[in-house]
Length: 170
Image 1 (tube, rainbow, N blue to C red):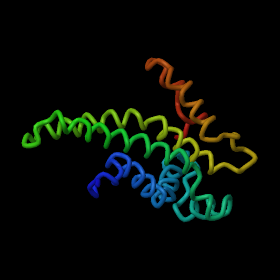
Image 2: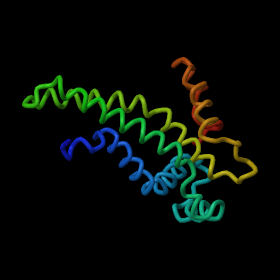
Image 3: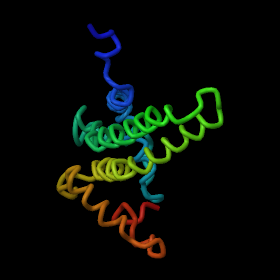
């Protein structure tokens, strides 16, 4: 007969699912933040107008524009972080705080790198939602992800040509 712990899911898996649930609740605020940050200087709108525009264009579901990319980012970033930390604990002295901090830093760094594509795609989808439907690119998570993959191949010297938004935001 197995112990109670054998039936539990691994912590890294639970961490990924819990982060996806958490991002579901905070996504509307993130959407508003992205739209505030990507406004042009000459067309600045207050938060109340941004909220009103989101609601007029998409109703309550409009506040969840780009949620699939947010889930993807959280699931990749958080599960990577938790999995690396869990796996690395076996190789680190539990009494050495510096070693545990180093492991956590490494896990967070790798998780951050893994999560970048989802983060960029999320911002692109959230920014596109402020456009009228007829002016929005027909973009799903998959096509936005493909666009990101093509852009990341740009050399650093031509970074100005590789901006995530087609037009300057300032």
